[in-house]
Amino acid sequence: MNINKIKVVELFGGIGAIRKALIRTIKPPNFEIIDYVESDKKTVNAYNAIYNDFYKPLDIREYSLPNNVNVDLLFHGSPCQDFSCAGKNIGGSKESKSRSSLLWETIRIIKEAQIKPKIVIWENVKNVLSKKHKPIFDAYIKALNDLGYVSHYKIINSLDCGIPQSRNRVFTVSINKNYLKQ
Image 1 (cartoon, rainbow, N blue to C red):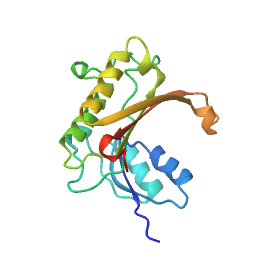
Image 2 (cartoon, rainbow, N blue to C red; image 1 turned 135 degrees about the vertical axis):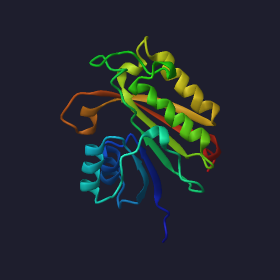
Image 3 (tube, helix red, strand yellow; image 1 turned 90 degrees about the horizontal axis):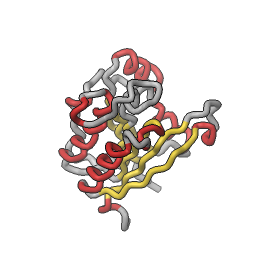
Image 4 (tube, helix red, strand yellow; image 1 turned 60 degrees about the vertical axis):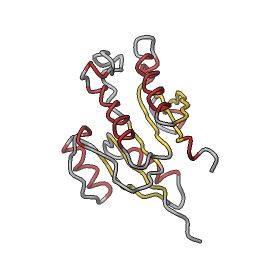
């Protein structure tokens, strides 16, 4: 039986938490990381050491999805510092030029793609839903809707996933409408 591998792109990939989660949850591991984007050199080196890969640091503003590739899952955990209560709390509007505003690069990447990803998952801090930052969150959801996605979100505490740390995170799952009937 030949089952196609799930093709995954990691944006703001860090040391590969999404890859580790996929390894732990998909048995047998039936996925393929087709691209990984992270700008921090030390972080990329750690990722490469952990997963025996050879990625180079890359600024998200210089990235585009590979042409003629059906991406099943695009995951991005864009910088949270400017949404976080522990950070500067200046937000992620396009005009802010904050690190958190890099989430709009994901929208650009999807908009420019020849073939739009089937599923887009965004993870960020719970404070992105605060009164101050909710307009940015809503604008992000609207941008995905305008690109043909249906989105849902949920707050998940890391304790509920077996991680010995209490951290609430917002996970947004956006599904390309073209694949909803499949």
